[in-house]
Image (cartoon, rainbow, N blue to C red; front, top):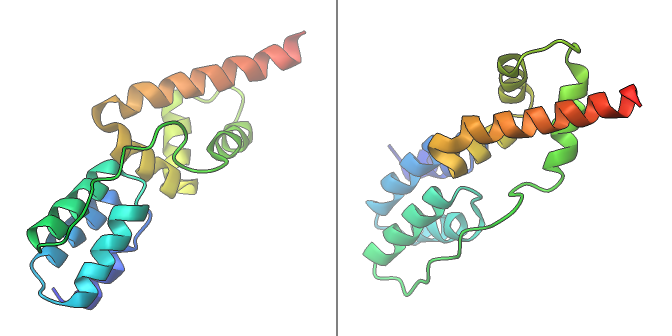
Length: 143
């Protein structure tokens, strides 16, 4: 693949695996522009695994870099509100799987970012969020 293709993939906000593969590809390109993309990814990507890969690639290229700390809390501004709006658009008797599918379709950046960040605990965490939002929604209307 070419630099331009890796650069495009590194900017894809809805697929952290594609960004990770782009970082791996950019690592092998001897070009100052590749370093620039790797620096940007290392500084700004929300998925720590991708950030760390960019850090390692820059290290391999001889750059003097420091691994950024893993972000805590919400990785995307306004995520709670977006999830509530999505949940409220679903039928009252929807299932967790319905919610998860709609999140993946309608809010792919949120889905992808948290899936990449949380790894194997993503489904459990998302289900916890869903049940909290669902119970608070019911509590507001049953009082």
